[in-house]
Image (cartoon, rainbow, N blue to C red; front, top):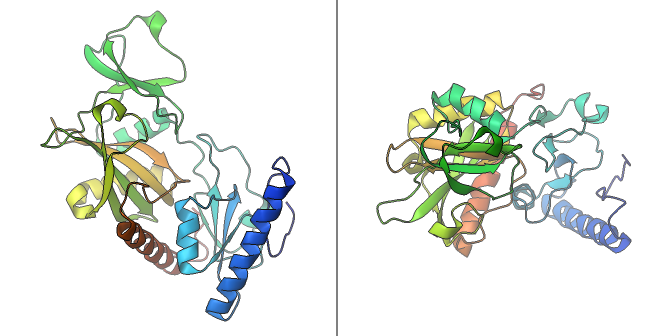
Length: 302
């Protein structure tokens, strides 16, 4: 890993013009932040991936006027494992693990659906998984891996020979409201708290995709009750998550909440959110992020 004192590290596989432009843009932003703060801004290191400008973390740091890089720095404010993979195998280097800065998501290395299911069952007392060879009725089959958006409804039971590897079989959660519209909750989780929630409406034919018809900010206490917030905190602790966004569904028939995805490298806010609500969302996330870091002990390396 190159030191790159004022820039970012971009994969050598990327075109040279892309590497150049990203470093020029980073330096220009850094100069602007230095002028705004009248000093070198606080540093956030995301490793190993450099967060996209579309990522929520990038927007948080721009709002705070903090430098965000994946290159080594002296005295960073915080280091975050930022690896856009379901199973995160890149070892953290010693210049991160031996440092004194906060280290978030360090041990968040497995966010497969089956891993999520075990943590959900332990925290909530119920889960989503079904045995496809004995379950009767509609069920959902989807990939173990994040961001595939390939869920589909099938009817059980099925034969042992029809079971697909690297897939999970889950309840068909009826996540619709009183008007019949399907919706998901997107929950922002930052160091034990949920400062922000979105409600994302979807058409019935695209309920398993990332396509939304509309989105809005919703009060966290409207989306979740106190016990559910506690259960989510327990679940994230078992998954070693400090920072992530979660997708959750509420079943219209039982009222139960199901956390179906955990994403420690989220993009956001949702594109369908009105402009003014996007600004509110970024400001809310930035304030929660800053408060969580300032309220944590420098020796905290979960």
